[in-house]
Image (tube, rainbow, N blue to C red):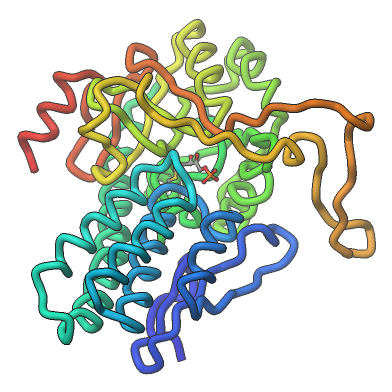
Amino acid sequence: MFSSDDLSSLRWDAVSGAVEIIDQTLLPHTLHWVHLDSLEAYCHAISVMQVRGAPLIGITAAFGLAHAVAENPSDTNLVAASASLMATRPTAVNLRWALETMERHLCSLVEGDRAVAARQQAIAMRQADIDNCALIGENGLGLLRDIPHGETLNIMTHCNAGWLATIQWGTALAPIYKAQAAGLPVHVWVSETRPRNQGMNLTAWELQRAGVPCTVVADNSCGQLMREGKVDCVIVGSDRTAANGDVCNKVGTYLKALAAQDNDIPFYVALPESTIDWRCDTGQEIPIEERDSLEVLTIAGVDYAGQGLEVNLAAADTQAANPAFDVTPARLVRGLVTEHGVFEASGAGLTELQGRL
Ligand code: MRU
């Protein structure tokens, strides 16, 4: 029996030690838990995006390293397993943060103590992620309450920065869940997020399960919705935020930020401290993942009988490029919503945050 909450993206069993994740490539059509029982299974889960979203990638990697250390606690294996996990995806800095945190904790211990300590550390990081996201939700709710709106507060989001991208709550969706719980009437514009459709497949699924009113829109319609006055604010997550406040997030985020600026709509980014890369001075230095062009040229779903189906969209031999992330300059970001409070997206803002740590 799993001791941790069912409604979380990664659960663990205190007795057997088993770890399970939701296979997010099958959502929204199938909710299927996958048992991770080898280092290879952890690496595969991250690289094929059975798990995705910066914080969840980090926590999954922490459990993956704990698994590897339980099998072989030597220094050589610790370093090799960490390198394998690190190679799974390049952009979300939470992966590096989680692995470095684990390694720092473990390398000072004798080998015999490492397995238990690694497991405890991964469990503590999972719990800290839940607590931090709940705080992000509270801090974001404070902002949402002050945004002028009609009967309903219309919030736009991109990609999935909900509990599927973290452990529980999410980052960008946490303030929305808190708003709903506080009785603030909200409606969410969910941009589909081509090519992998995390908005349509994951965010809309999450919000619908939680009873939050939402509408999926094509990515390209977002500027027009803003021009028509149908958006009161935009809130997104981040995969890596540079020390000057530049924000890297799912490709398409930058265009939304530009449109929001042009329409004087506040554009907020919600992120835990673990998403800040203090070693990146600006967004220019952030590695942008280039994914398989087939993600652009094909689309997956289910047919009318509910059978899984992938179809080709393009003419034969069509070339496609697939940068998975983009960088939004700090000047377009109204504020960074973190577990420590809301900060200006600037070097000064992040220095202020650093002072609170
Ligand atoms: O490629 P993905 O699905 O891992 O990208 C996820 C995002 O871009 C999210 O917006 C980001 O990780 C923030 S998650 C709280």
